[in-house]
Image 1 (cartoon, each protein chain N blue to C red):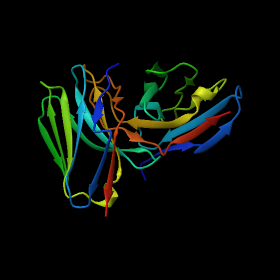
Image 2 (image 1 turned 90 degrees about the horizontal axis):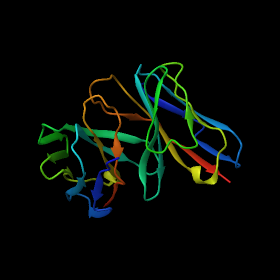
Image 3 (image 1 turned 60 degrees about the vertical axis):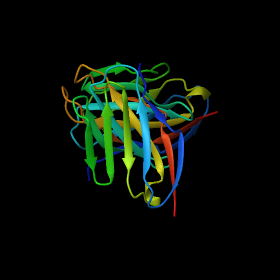
Image 4 (image 1 turned 120 degrees about the vertical axis):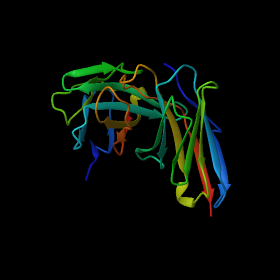
Length: 114
Length: 113
């Protein structure tokens, strides 16, 4: 089944403890992206990647890191999480470049930083 | 970055009625997409309409795009309780291939049996 998977689905952690949220897609998509969703603010893009070893900042990149060493994986790293990073996070992927395609979203990771 | 704004923020209707949601945006776009999100879950793509298109249909969904007014509408006909969800528009600015979508804040649709 074509899908985007994220792990973990739920995470409660403490301020300053480094964490990684994994994202993997099995559709051979070139484009991958991370969003956060907060009440009243909608979805905001954190980082995106057009292909392996090609990443770029979205609208709210501060406090986050990403890497794209393999086409299928796009982990989101919070080196020193803070309470304002408590949010619902979504990974998404999309095929191709040079044309606009729909994005396929993962199920979400609900992160709470205390 | 530009952001689409959906209107209304919330809509409550009865099963069988039509639901119309609107999206306005500020600058020129390459395409506009509509997504659905069931409570707390991932977004699901509904329709993509390009800037040179005026209307698209998919089952009970009809999307229109008016680039002169910088607005789009999503019509769901003969709504069902299962249509209860939040609906988001997302815009992609030109040039084509610049693959960043900007999402609005969504319209929450409640369809009562």
